[in-house]
Image (cartoon, rainbow, N blue to C red):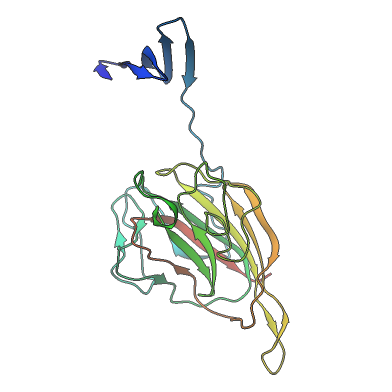
Length: 244
């Protein structure tokens, strides 16, 4: 296309036909050689939970203020980057980042994340990370926008259960997880009496509800881990309310 002031003129061949069109004021209009015509409007999806304010009893793990470097003192990996726009970015190849504080039952964990655009990559190689509850139970982070999803896609409990719906937004868009977690209950011999359960809200869509996580061994306490899988994933506004 050709950029002309406030619009873009388009021309070329597709489907065996010549097409001409224009992008202006958020609308694409195009006409074909034989009179075909279509219009597309720009539509931007956003998570309604982005920017959610923490309650008074929350533990602030990653404060967010636009235009100010965030305080990373709640985290163990000093190689992750505090950016001037208020976010924390994964340091590729430098390892996962864990909270210094450990947790058990979680009434509400709020996390905001943004994925880079990696159009030439596919599957697990495309904007991959994860949120590990108690350093053990992964809620997958991945660019899964528009895909038929599996347990390995965004919102999946990795290798356990896929999300009820694919609620992913496009890359370079802030997304949210709001998570409730009940840790496993063990007997005096540390055998499992009750499996852990997790509820996950992804961008205001409930994708898991009290989903059991079956394992033969469980942790009852641990940090929150953000995975390094070699991608420039960004995080902001992370806070947690402990308890049931």
